[in-house]
Image (cartoon, rainbow, N blue to C red):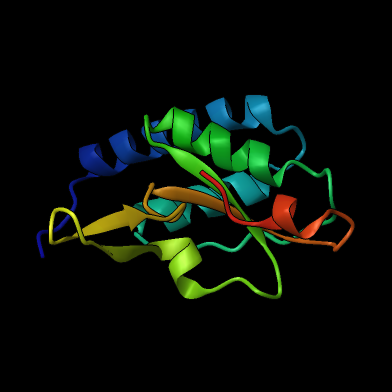
Length: 129
């Protein structure tokens, strides 16, 4: 691993601050959370946002994705959710005699999962793209 020069560190700090400020325009009052989410992104980690309904979790995920020119999707978590509902599934096409992969919502770089409260009909709580 190569060492970072002071100029590179200053550049990174400047870019990081500008990215956080841009996301902060969409999500007010959550500067610490925005900086943690960015840290998670640059370290190629995973992030689970937990908070009360209506506090801007999806807005922050969308702002983060838009800031870095990425993409995002939202997953509604339910008790009957299967891993293939999130990651995607390979289905055999009998006519073509091939397997086709149908990606799930986690295919984009940024994904915003939410837990279902059970107030909606079963069909509307399913994963959708």
